[in-house]
Image (tube, rainbow, N blue to C red; front, side, top):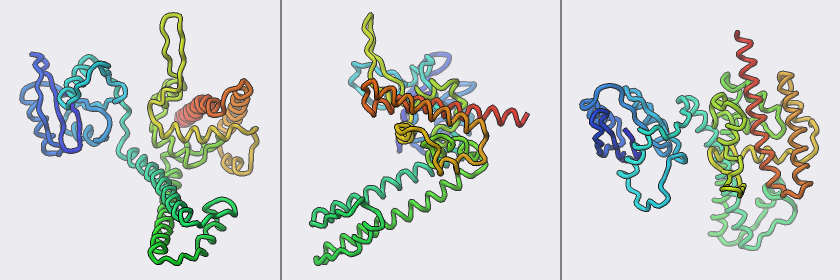
Amino acid sequence: AAMDTHKKEHQVAWVHPETGEIGEFAVANTVRDIERMVKKIRKQVAGEIHVCYEAGLCGFVLKRRLEKLGCVAQVIAPSLVWRKPGDRVKTDRRDAKKLLTQFIAGQLTEVWVPDPEQEADRELTRCRDSAQRDLKQARQRLNSLVVRHGYIYQEGNLWTDRHHRWLKSLTIEQAKLRTVFDEYRSEIEHCVQRLESLDQQVQSLAQSERYRSAVGVLRCLRGIDTLTAITLLTEIFEFGRFDNPRALMAYLGVTPSEDSSGERRRPGAITKTGNRRVRRILTEAAWHHRHPYAVGKALKLRRKDQPAWAVDLADRAAKRLYRRYRHLTERGKAAPVAIIAVVRELAGFVWAMLHQLQSSVAATSS
């Protein structure tokens, strides 16, 4: 069976294994109605019931509900579902039947499904990311307000201690305008407190038994600290599912696209498939490698008490990535283009670091 899922109702298409007859019906997105759906299909067929649906709104809860009912459920990667270029009619029924056809033919790709604890860990890091965006937007709103009314700060960077003192010293005569100004400042204070609270929780998560070792070795890499490391681990879950670094690079969408035919070869921009959040944080980390490599005080503290092999690998990575950036920029490549090449290789070093950690842990336990 294949399900086109929505918040309130799912469209279901299923095929009888003996007659090949296709049945269609809609089911409400409730535990009770999903149980009825499984019983309805089970009355007409014997054996296992295989169900698939695209990853998206319903997350992995629907998969767990179906598995509790004895079904074999698969969550499918939406970007890898084949679509006819000339098909201009899209309905829930057609989507469910199309998914069913490709499911039967074995043309769909299943996504990696985390356990409930891993999923909760990922939601925490994503909540922290949302809090950071909320703070940025709140600050922008306040800054736009004061600029519109002629209060221009010209003594340095915004949102420093000096800037906050300047904001407090502003004299706004209009009562309504002062009210708006105070509301915006209160919102910023709330966002700052919320972000600090989430940072503490993320730090605690990084120090938990499940992530402590992996976060420690990843922090040996230049440009990667606790937040970046724990985000990598909670977004990708299991690095062992990638057989080699190239598979991880392709998953993150940092490999070049291509449009070639016959003797013509036309490479393009990166594919940008897969997890964009991981792609973004690796890009931020890669910008550190545009400067000559040096082990500063903060990096020394991060590497303290870490395995020697992790420090050696991090040193090799930093030296190679800096040389890669210099080589590309000296050939005339724009800095953002060179950085994407660094991101691609940095992803490979992240894979190597965690692969070596898994091998070390396996050797110690045996």
